[in-house]
Length: 267
Image 1: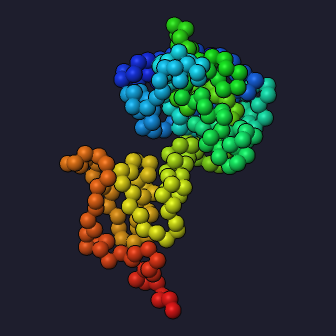
Image 2: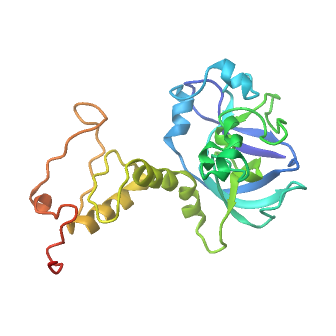
């Protein structure tokens, strides 16, 4: 089939919208009609050459180079076709994308380390995961990589069954798209890496549009004050870690472990 997609043909070149060719689903493939896609900066990192892999490594993934590739690894949509061996979803199912496919049976998955699943080794570049076939091509016949083995910057996505997660019919596909990367990454960074615990007061530095709402709500609930979103201008010292001086509205905010002013005192 023919569909439209945003492609990066050369590192540093702008995204271009082109018609691309997608072949019929293979045995473990799922064809999804996209409804929502998020722009994560990881896509820009790859486009600009800030994130990637040396050509010999890309070759081991089964690709000649990291470009050309279809951008996007965050999104949601509705399944419209499946391969003959697909069992977890069927046409009509709403799904969220997963840029780290998890089989559930390899050594890493059974240990609860799905982010190290063997299937995730070829998500930056290369053909389809299960049978190593190229099913995405440009109009001139070039093989197309897909960001995260997905390529959500397209009207349709053909990906492995292990790269989609079925969601309930009443779940907003906008929310499902955000959960497929931004929310999962933000939650994991806060809870798994930073070790944030309930009741702690935290400062979120460098929030993007997705996490603004969550950060503001967290600050308001934790401190009992009204949070003001930061100005989106580059600091004088450049982007990075910067100290914040509390103003009068937040100076008296309770510290971790202390009750709020309106809470009953504990004996």
